[in-house]
Length: 424
Ligand SMILES: C[S@@+](CC[C@H](N)C(=O)[O-])C[C@H]1O[C@@H](n2cnc3c(N)ncnc32)[C@H](O)[C@@H]1O
Image 1 (tube, helix red, strand yellow):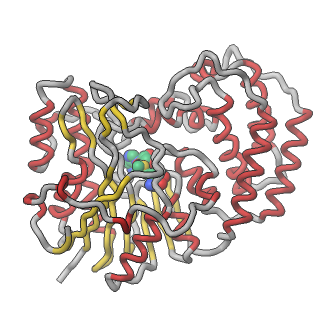
Image 2: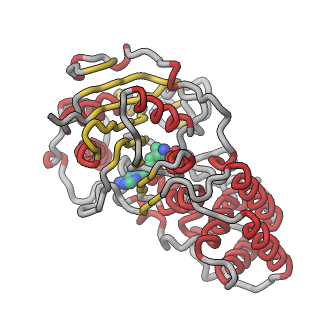
């Protein structure tokens, strides 16, 4: 779908797959994989977006990712010497994003790694497990807790290592938490595996840091494009949003992940919060992000209204409110994204549809209409196959994620929604 057409007449299901957005020209670099992030999208989306903009005659000097996650777009922009601004409400996401696109001297990284491992070998301070955070005790055996506490103290206390390098090693620390815990290995969602044994923390940290340093060595990204990443809600009032030529982003979907829950191990260990549930507040798409609002108070467009109406008899009021809140948030996002762009700038959103209790949630069409209402004029909307997203495409009979391949598959494709800002 291309051009200046009215979007409400278009059936998004009939939009065909565009090979252009399906696969990258090169294998994804190791640096993109230094830390797991369930909702990460493929790095080549950014490359293709920059090429697409070029073909439209748009020169990209500055890119934003307003839901920057683990910094996929940030890193790709930096590599090309393009300035980048991004934000994410999840502090674990921005830690990873900052480390990925940070400037590091590989020789120093190697030296610090040796020092930390040496200290970890001999360190055996005793920490009080009985007074530890209840959730940390829930996920970690006492012995693992002791070893991780020692490691964290060593990283934080090593006075020769400056804060930028400490972040690098804290990011490594963060990525070994899941394998070190009782969290069921194959599950994205929080689930204890009673059979999972204890892991050797020294070994995990040694391998993780070795992999990360080698990823830096291969990537050679030091001192290229300037990267700014903020830990904040994109919707925060008075947030200073810079003017950019292009936005490349993938927003949350209705009823998809509870990001705060998925990253609770890191949030708790890295002291971002004492209660990870606090981090659900402000997270778009969270079923807990409802505050005091009433459904009637949201100014929703027709697509959102129809979905809410269909869901009303099927679900609890609080769930319904969170879905209305999602649509209202995405409408605000559309307006703010429009304001950030220079004239002829483009916004590219990667977004998929979902289903809830038998009702199709047309996230993509809702977003496209919201962008149109926000002032975007020219659209290019295509579909891509989801290939390397770490997300199960299957849902059980009540619409929950499942790895059971016999269940309904509803995530096989996602949309690329591109809108251009054209001011007279
Ligand atoms: C689909 S993910 C983006 C993944 C990203 N493209 C990547 O490659 O890592 C959506 C992100 O939106 C973030 N998010 C949710 N609500 C937000 C808000 N109000 N402001 C900023 N970020 C938010 C989530 O924390 C999550 O990282």
